[in-house]
Image 1 (cartoon, one colour):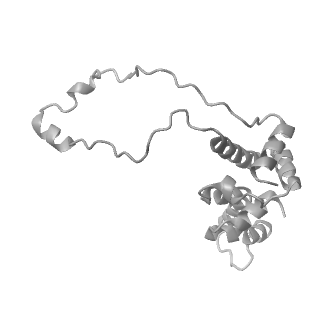
Image 2 (cartoon, one colour; image 1 turned 180 degrees about the vertical axis):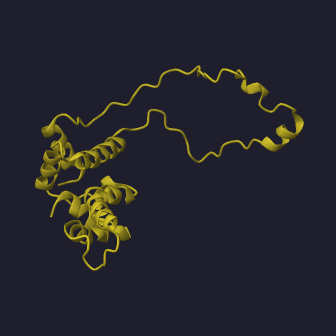
Image 3 (spheres, one colour; image 1 turned 45 degrees about the vertical axis):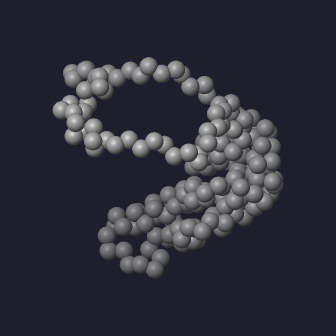
Amino acid sequence: MSFEDKMIAASELKQSKLMRPARVASERPDTGVQILNKSAYFVIRDCADVTQKYLSLLCYGSFSDPVDQLKGKFTKADIKDLVARSRKPDNAHTRQLLCAIVADVNRCECAPHDEQSTSESPEEFDYESIEQQQDDIYGDYDYPDDDMNITADTQPVEPQAITVDLTGDTSLTDRLIQAFKA
């Protein structure tokens, strides 16, 4: 069972049961149905192919905290195989799944720079009373009528450090093994 198969099996999505029928439909699109229109054959076949490639990404996205929820589900060999397959040019779908996983691993490891209390509720602003008091409620927004080139006077945001390198197979594999407790 591959990394993707184990992840799909762990998903609670109803679509997670589509892999087996998709494999059958990909090979024989007319299985169980009568094809009345030639194009239906190709639609069924191609939908099955898309399902085989992207069902794992759909299932991965269904987890609220995939890194935590999938801990212990994979072996080291599963992770090494996933990383190796993602490098092949004909496996763009595997590369996309790997990128989503790495993004979540990074998110889990990167602590926010400024932690703010979430217990405070923001002040309520009564927009309706302002709208009733002013003729031009957009006047303070101060943008030119004809020129819609809007520039913000903001400071650039420093990017957070990426803790998993997508270019190094060994470091990437090791980091995923650690994140998923394989």
